[in-house]
Length: 184
Image (cartoon, rainbow, N blue to C red; front, side):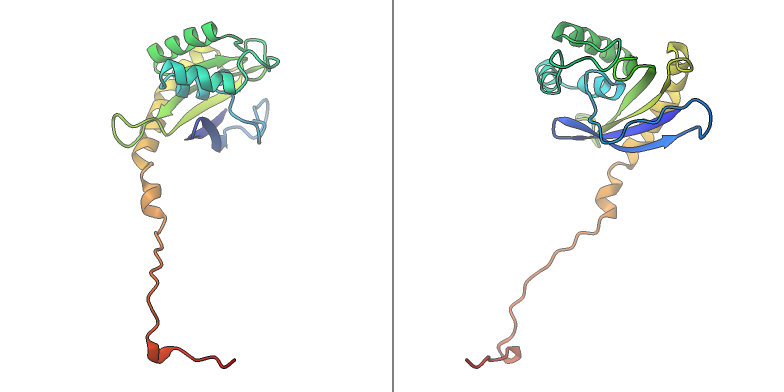
């Protein structure tokens, strides 16, 4: 199956990493360069469910909820549908979709927590694949591993702050005896 990770950037989720399980047979290869549709993807639902309702609705509407053609058979198209889905997502603690972002694709996602308990989530991680292999029962069987991955990523997340060397350039005046005079 396809494992994907997003990061939160402002009011958007950005796909940043993936890993494909199978090289052969029926597999799901995501289309790259596409935006995360927050109201139609497991990643988006998991993330939107962590926001207050007004923010979640604003983001979903800004991303086209009810304003564009549905990309798949089960794509929601109204604010009441979104509110029901987010309430269910909050209660479950994960986002799940079945043919909502793409025909024939099911997925489950969890959030990646921020460094401190009250920090906003920093991203999401998901598993997606063909609906013929990823029914609800199979998706729920994957959930414990997905949650463990999320916990590991949350613990590692601050490492980026330590890995990127900070380069501070301090300008110091050049001593007068080291300067050269230029003749006109």
